[in-house]
Amino acid sequence: MEQITVADFDPAEYIETPEDVFLTLKVADEEGDPELLLSVIRDIARSNGMAQLAKELNLDRAGLYKSFAPEGNPSFKTVFNLLDLLGLRLKIESKSA
Image 1: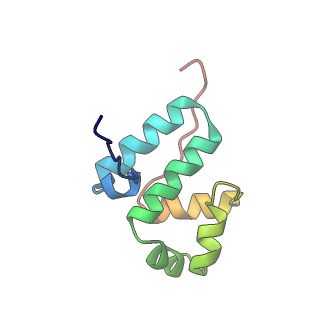
Image 2: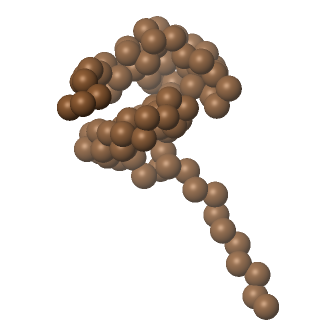
């Protein structure tokens, strides 16, 4: 039997356009899982270059990586500022909408 090798999948490599960013976040938000949403934000940040984003947010690169690591807990301010930097904003809706 032939052995099959599967390459690691890195979602950050497939988030290329502002529409990719928007749709990826929209789907993650619809799942209602905060850990998934933070994971997607991390992938989006990596796809845009963490070092440059950290510089624009006046944070160090290591700190930004640590905030969005799976065990990280970024502040709301960091998430809000990062989304703003990516040209996005949060929108609050009623659950019944």
